[in-house]
Image 1 (cartoon, rainbow, N blue to C red):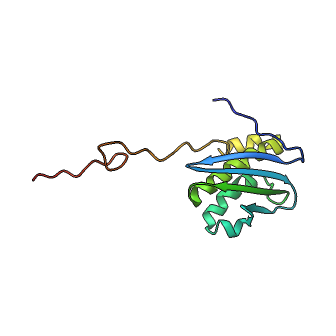
Image 2 (image 1 turned 135 degrees about the vertical axis):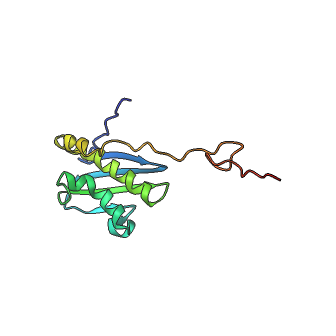
Image 3 (image 1 turned 180 degrees about the horizontal axis):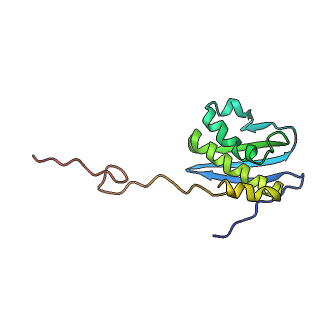
Length: 138
């Protein structure tokens, strides 16, 4: 699978797209003071669960860029957990184009790999993806 380089915007912004389950996150990174906005709201207000906040911040904390870049995330689809995973991948991809020196750190921490697990489709004749119908003796 060929990797597609994420573009660097004309204003000096780095762009990255992240996906997880059915969620898609579009991330824009620029040099700044460390503010993170998700769908027009602060990170703490959008991701109220600490686990989800920490997942979004993982690429920034592992590369020590949390206080030196501003992040704007637009995310849609799926649930909160999928959206936080998509935002994590988007931030990591945008950081890779923002500063090429951090790519090795992101790769070692497995932050540039997309999580390919998706919901399995329902099959005909079954009640779900794998669950069959209940056996009735009479």
